Length: 56
Image 1 (cartoon, rainbow, N blue to C red):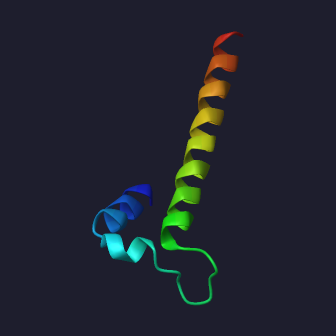
Image 2 (spheres, one colour):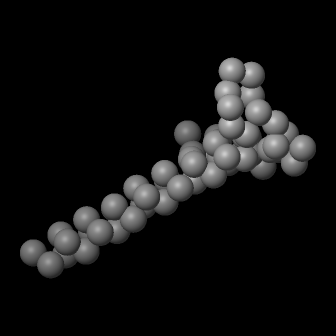
């Protein structure tokens, strides 16, 4: 799923980043920024769990 999203964003014209999808109040760029932040949050959780389990 992540790979598919990256490929879709890679082919997204820059002008489309500033567009606000119908029925939304925020831009595509803001949505993608939120997706990236969410992904990083979970990556951090995984790293923390790895460190905690290594100390057992």
